[in-house]
Amino acid sequence: MPVGAPDFFELDDQLSAVEKGVRSAAKSFVEKEVNPIISDCYIEGKFPVDLIPKIAAKGFLGPTLPKKYGGMELNHVAYGLMLHELEAGDSGIRSFVSVQGALCMYPIYRYGSEEQKMKWLPRMAKGELVGCFGLTEPNAGSDPGRMSTTATKKGDSWEITGRKMWITNGSIADLAVVWAKDSSSGEVLGFVVEKGMPGFSAPEIEGKLSLRASRTSELVLDKVNVPDSNRLPEAKGLSGPLSCLNQARFGIAWGTLGLATDCYAEALKYAQERVQFDKPIAQFQLTQKKLVELHTDISLGQIMMLQFGRMKEKGNLRHQHVSMAKMFCCELGLRAARVARSILGGSGILADFHCMRHSQNMESVFTYEGTHEVHELILGREITGLDGFS
Image (cartoon, rainbow, N blue to C red; front, side):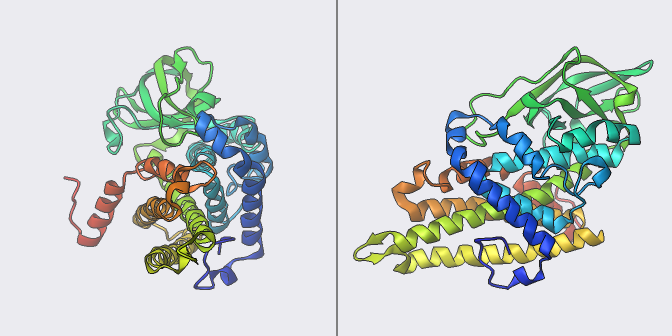
């Protein structure tokens, strides 16, 4: 399995040469390009935009898409292993890649016309265009059906008015996939809103204590005139945006498993080297208990994600599976970061180590793309047949 991770079940033997190659390329990229700068980026609250061309050059943007649209036609396990390594670097880097690929390129590919695909996807794969995803609103998070953003048909164009909130990449995006209700029918439609359209702005959200190496913005749409040629013709109803979230959640689960693995590796190394009372703290029973529990849960997470990846490749992965993956791996990532911080003691709060930054990032990842509680209710409905949402 992932380089540097426990491989207690010898899952590495089940990976293809391509999957191992993608994993190694992503790990090398993180070691050379991300780790040397990410602490400073986090402290300064900036996203390293100069990495975008390098990320694109590695083929990390929309890698599962067909080559004619700039993708690499990777399978879903290779894609997951890539995100596993990127989030071991930082959640902000993985979030950028996830939003660009799963939340922007995917809906254009799935719901767009051939003309739209050729217009935007190759340039997005090259990092020449950055995208963002506009679904969440100030008063519509876990319940997207309550969205108040409207689209009114006016001749050959649409007038879109509303606000979107907590938008990753918003202030650096060249285009936004925006979801709005048709003011006549109430049906949810998808649009590509381009930077520079009058009435469209993306003010930065200030004061974040989490995901600081990531751009997070509002999207303000004040009677923005969007040509009908920018409407995604096959996107009708909430199934459109929800299918995009399903793509993203699959990647988040892989990513947070990578974050947990990085925290575990950091804690294990520190515990083996840190000597107290004339012996390494890894020899103390309570420290071993912490490490064993993380090792076990990471190993179980690897089995889960490899199996879910193979199911996705066969077309058998349902949204309930994705909810379980997101729920389990995010909880594990948050706990692993906190446990690692406790093992590192006072050193754990320093930027020289990863666990505190990972812990703060996980406070956001634990919540976004469907809260932990929402995924529990999705699984509760699956298990009992009873709807706990109502």
